[in-house]
Amino acid sequence: MIDLNLCNQQQINALLKIKETGNTAFIALLEEQIEKAVLRLQQADDMVMIHRLQGRCEAFNDLLTAVKESHKVVNRS
Image 1 (cartoon, rainbow, N blue to C red):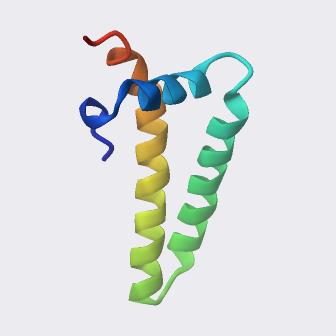
Image 2 (cartoon, rainbow, N blue to C red; image 1 turned 30 degrees about the horizontal axis):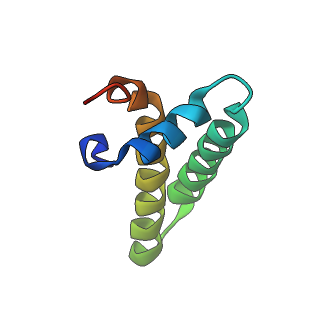
């Protein structure tokens, strides 16, 4: 999980800009990649591949969560 409290203001602003109108393509890309990884995960039979796909899903999900939660820390002092 990305700890937004450890991100600097510039990083928070970048995450927040992704959320702004007109910047939904990146969010859609992440969601698409998660869906593809989940489909591959459902059919995977190799434990190494399963772990890699789980990590991939987790990383993309963490990015999505960071974008969605960035507004909570944007005005911190």
